[in-house]
Image (cartoon, rainbow, N blue to C red; front, side, top):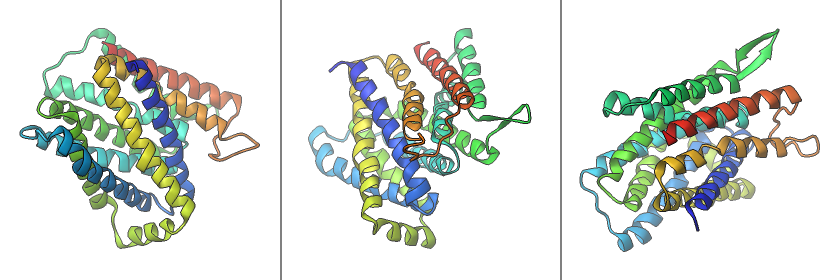
Length: 302
């Protein structure tokens, strides 16, 4: 298997996971908080598998990398919790591109905190991503373009910022410990973070009631118990086989996969996601997604 194949498998699987998560947050769970509790439960299961089966085989070389891995897990918990909340409020083909601007915040953190530098082309890429993020969340209204559901926009951007910081923390962790140990600590701390943010008597009660539905439980297990960990594993394989800049550029195509899936599942014959499919809306979405993908790719390759 080549790194390109592994990266494309990871990207396409994450797109499927996002579509399933949209279904879960909107139709199968009564609130974003109750879905977050279910997500946390799945992360506990993933963490147990890593610590019980993987770490005894590959070893746990923690040390100075553990605090960074813990920080990464907590930031991932915050970022994904915000993303799932925004996913409940916004169309999946608008939410995912906004989530993908996380590397822009990572680049900014590298410049401001880690002493890195960006070329003029990379700064242009940052502006292109920001412009695409604004466009993908805009809707024509009375001849003007207004941000779609302002609250959802800021929630999703806040989630992207948190994920961008999580990427930076993960980068620091990789300098001190192996990837498998990072994944184990990240899953454990992510579950703790999600529970701290979302576990309330009401959300726990809602999760228990939703989990009695076999279809809901099966969809949650498929998305967050099987496909998401497999997608993450394929991403690790891609990083092991190829350069991180090129892998990042390939995975930035995820919004295209999500847009295609969203359109396929929102036809008049099978309207599973209720996404608008008029020519003008699809045209603006495609242009905006293209801007974000091109900007992230230029930023990564630079």
